[in-house]
Image (tube, rainbow, N blue to C red; front, side):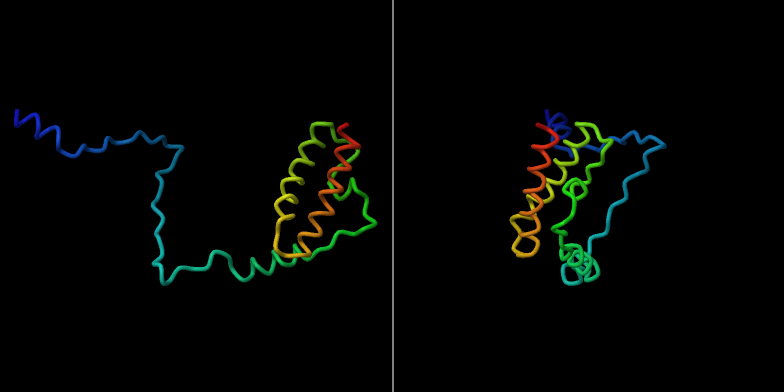
Length: 120
């Protein structure tokens, strides 16, 4: 009885995993200490994001060009392109930055008009 309980309560040994040669062994990533943790984004990345966010949409630009719709695109390709743009600009519409929010609202209106034109 004691031998059974001894086996039962012993920690289980990990079985070796089969690793294919085409799949390298996962390496543990070193975790930085909390005090020396680097910021999530670098200042250069923030500058690049601010530059992209500050770009204004030209009011006289062609709506198809704004949405990236080309004449040879199929209905499915247009639908996929508009879905990607909608997701991107719908998230930006709730931004706290007024210029980004205004640009997103304008783009959502353009996307809606392109959906009516090309998909209805």
